[in-house]
Length: 357
Image 1 (spheres, helix red, strand yellow):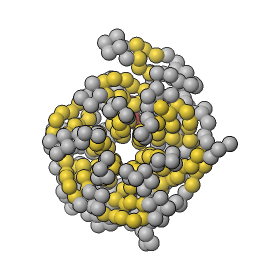
Image 2 (cartoon, rainbow, N blue to C red):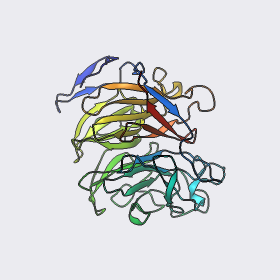
Image 3 (cartoon, rainbow, N blue to C red):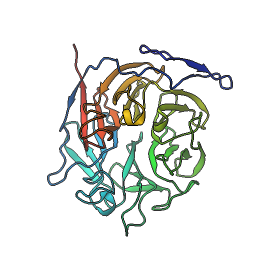
Image 4 (tube, one colour):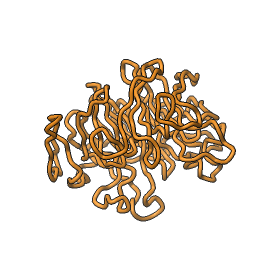
């Protein structure tokens, strides 16, 4: 693994696995060029509807259209505007936008409490995880599931048991993300920290439980809020282990391969067809013991771990209206390398276009 700058404070060789592991004691990777211009207001949401918190975003197989799931005009089910999240709403949650930012399709209303993780598979099917912290009084049968839709919005599969938590093959506890391998196997990042689960769950293409791995902790193969998933061209599974401030890398049978800290405290992770890794840090601030690290998007190589660019979060992480609040949580890039960041605190989706000097 190579790092252009800054360098690691130290590295440790794992004798048992033979893997060089980047340790947490390293300098912050803030000092990289930013060749991107930020654009806001690109996506046109229908009149009478406002953006809610958004952590769910992915690219269509056409390489240009963007799929987004937003939280029904609010931050979470605990918010008061205009309703307590999607738990009490029939608003369509899944929104498709064309390359001009116009909404061309919507569906998925009345199913979710907090749409959280999001994935568009190789066949164009849409996968959404539902990860509520709590449910409003009187609301039952929502949350803790993963739902598969066809590109036209037909509900094709549900993993988990709606409204019921657990840690076996038919129950989740706050599933944060989902990713489908090229062969159709399904991986779910199950857990959002706290008293939720801390594991990766694997199913076959028909939704049959195959295995799971992980437990709460900070060792190899342990997790503290496994918040995002991505897969590189080698079929390695990348897990944004957010509250451990690292990426963990596994093979598809759960064998630990490596861990990287240089991409910071990632909420969202995306790897394109050229193995360019886009990671968005929405939480680093003084309160989380990350005073030296800046929130934002780091762009680098999924092959080597080398970082090329850093796009700082435009909001102050320690002062102002979004201090301590999540900025970008979801991240994706289209076939032209245009980056889109889905934001929770600011309740928006930002567009980053690379410019030439």
